[in-house]
Length: 191
Image (tube, rainbow, N blue to C red; front, top):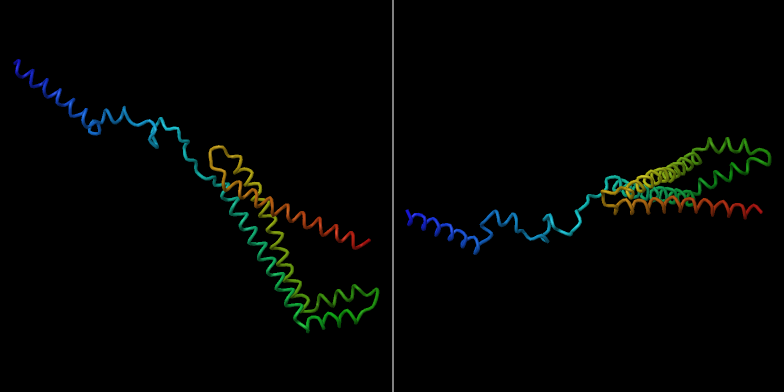
């Protein structure tokens, strides 16, 4: 019996020697003696990775949509002005209508202009450009609000929210600045 006890002791001591040489084989040692600075371990000093804010991404996408609408509106207006300027028949038609009426007959002249097909199509193109530009302001305003909410979110990343907020704010401030400048130039011209 003494020999059996010695064999058990040898097996146990051998077991400990094997574990001391190869700690990766013992699940107990792995669990309790893990590297506390390894990525993903509980003792890691690395902050948790936050997800991007969905509202911030929406603000960024709306800023891109607003910029696209502005670009399309400008292209439509520019092409329309180029077509009107190069179309001699349109200019001759406008001169004929303007020369047919004298002072005090602006209402009649306006009615004939509205009946003119060339003038109507030109106005329609400019209205489309204007709707695109005004629509871009509405989209930028919604994007500005979403950007503020995205930046205020504490548990999400703020990258897209900040970018969307800045772009949408620049669109709105730029438009307001252009309106103020155009009104001031118009007021100076009236003096």
